[in-house]
Structure formats: C-alpha cells, structure tokens
Image (cartoon, rainbow, N blue to C red):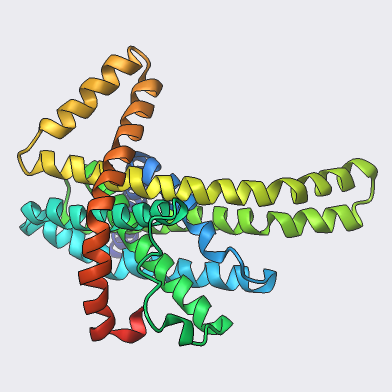
Length: 318
C-alpha cells in the first residue's frame, strides 16, 4: 500500500510539473505573440485581397486552403528551421529575413507601379492571353500567391516570437513557438473569414431580420463592405511595403550597418516628439517609403531576370 501511495504521489507531482509547464508555454506564447502584433495585423490585412472576385461559395474554402498552407509554413518549415538557426547559425537569420523582406517590397511596389500605369506586373507576359484562365486555375494561382506571401510574414512573426521567448531548453522553446504559430494562424484567418463573409451576413439580416433596426443594420453592412474590402486591399499593399522596408532596415542594422535605422529613428523622434504612437507612425511611414523605393529597384530585376528563369524552370508554379 505504501508503494502505491508513493507511486500516486509521484504521478501527482509529475502532473503538477506538466500543468506548470503548460501554463508556462501558454503564458510565454501569449507574451511572444503580442510582440509580433504588428506583423499579425499586416497578415490579416494582406489576405482578404486574395479572395476578391470569387463567388461567395468559394471564399471560405479558399481561406481554409490558405490557412492550412499557413499552418504548414509555420509548423513544418519555419519552426524547425528557426530553432536550428537560432541555436546553431544565428548569423544566417538576418540575410534570410532580408531576402523575404525584399520579396514583399517587390510585390508591393509592383502593385503600386501597376496602379500608376508604369507596368503590367510579372504576371503579364507574352503568351499569357492564350492561356485558359479557368476558375480552378485562377483559384490555384491566388491560393499559392497567398501562401507564398504568408510564408514571408510568418517568418517574421516566428522570428519575432522566438526572440521574445526567454532562454530555456530546446523543447520548451519548440512548444512555445508551436503554440504561437497555432494561436496566431487561428486569429488571423478567423478574422479574415469574418471579414470576407460580413457582406453575406448583412444580406441575410437585411432579408430576414425580424425588426426594422436589424434589417437596417444588414443593409448598412452590405453598403459598407465593398469600400471596406477595397480599403483592406490598399492597407494590405501598404503593409507589404511597411513590413518589407522594416525588415530590410532592421536586417542591415543586425549585419552591422546601423546608419539607415538611426536615420529613421532620428526623423521619427524629431517629428513624433514625446508621443510613442506618433513616433511609431512616422517610422512605419518611412519604412514604407524605403520599401517602395527598394521595390522599384527590384522590379526590373524580378520581371526581366528572376521571373523568366523561374517560369522556365517551374512553369506550373507560376
């Protein structure tokens, strides 16, 4: 009997330690996730534009497909690679992040150039008009484009979160980072699903609302959502440039060239003064301008060199 009691006591002790570890993981994950809030907002703003133009019945399946790709990006690729690099090759993280930041700058600047009538983008090329753009193929293109963009934003989120996790053993860091990945992905794509289906909910309220104010609310939602989605598209493009520019500037500082970061902070501080919000806003604007400038530099390289090579090597990926 005494042996059984001792065993039960040991099991209870292990359970307490496990519960404490779970609490630590959740607490650290919440804290680390909050550090990446800016990138999370960017991710949520960028994604809705990828379902624009599709029928209502395809919106949620596309979002779910992108969400599954995001889970795969974070848990299968970025989590193990991030842990390995952080523990064995931390010097490789800044240049890899800058490569991703450059992609965001290129994508954002290309969209701005297209709006200004300065180009047609890397998706317009000789022979494209001859291709049959059936809905399934278009959906495939949009989903893959969203997952590629998510990969870069997820890399930034996971890197920020990893840097915010207190030093501990490898498995605690892995569990915390995995929790961050799941929490953030659910939050982002849950929000995106609510945003893109809001107009359908508004139509249902307008048609079947039991009382006048409910029907009026539904009509108001339907009226507002097209403009809101258009605004989100603009915000998503701006977010690409802002995040991309910030990654480049921060990466240069990590690699030893602090001048760009010091100039950005100096201007932001002189303009924003004592207001942290104003300083943050000026920094974000400056990072966006720098991201746009760097993107314009990359457009001819991407469209004339990298994209044709990639299209020749992997035509089905375009």
